[in-house]
Image (cartoon, rainbow, N blue to C red; front, top):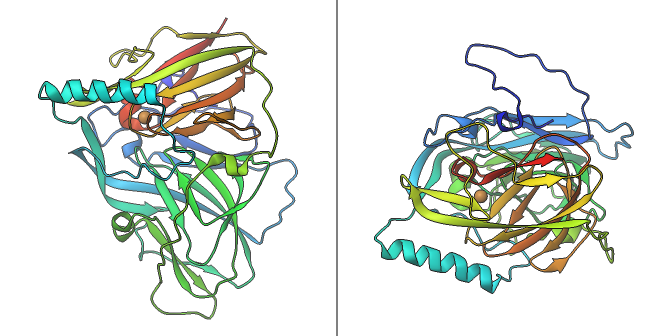
Length: 388
Ligand SMILES: [Cu+2]
């Protein structure tokens, strides 16, 4: 469905409207949002509120749960800062690639040696779930023994979020709306910008709890929600979960290998520190997407029906939520470790790490590929594929 302007869908002009018709496909938990470039304007793009969940019911839904609850995680009141404090150490596997690390560190060193400050980052004052800060609005009211299916969307413009629920675990059924082969329970969820998780929580631990972000500061500024069991009252409790690393492969098909691709494309991501009026400029294979025009030529050319592998090489120390429009991809390698059976449309690639994703070219048309971090995509981290 993704119809960004770069793919030929015109923007909805201010004070205007547009009617679109489409057959929803594939089923599962999807995401609608503005694709406008915000640049330095923190009131535009995904810094605002134009994001929300879309759920496409599957044709056959066994309904093995008692209730379904949608949660949208979203920050407000953004401001620029120099350097950030985003968690970087929660991903597994965590081994950095030496070559990528050398590229990234020497580029950063060169920039700082020339007296450049660190490029701008974005921070927030208010944090919300479904538009309310922790402690405001109604709690989620549950009964002991209930099975609650949560559909969680990270609607942030720029932030990676975590979520824990003291005394409970999340049985992850689907990632980005696609069922996983191994729906295993985990104590913590991690979602980058644009990622979605569907997970069942069995209500087995009566009390009044805070379902919230692991980052104390963000949770205290609103990133949480109270869950109240029937017959329980009092102040909501937060208990930090035990240390836990997030690894997509935990939900993968054991012992399976992905089929070989017809062709592999290598894509190296690099940061030019503070190079664009104080903002970091981002490049894919050395080229930044033009910031002042809507039309750029496609860099990768696809043939319908072929299976492509994208080797995503992150030569920066940031985690990037890499997103491909109009297709789902299969995770086939994470930091050098092969995996199979997980289909997503956003994948976090850790600092100085490599990941490989495969997709079948099954949806002809211009297709945008970009980092879902607004500040990154707005400053170059984007490219177009076309079908030939
Ligand atoms: Cu990015």
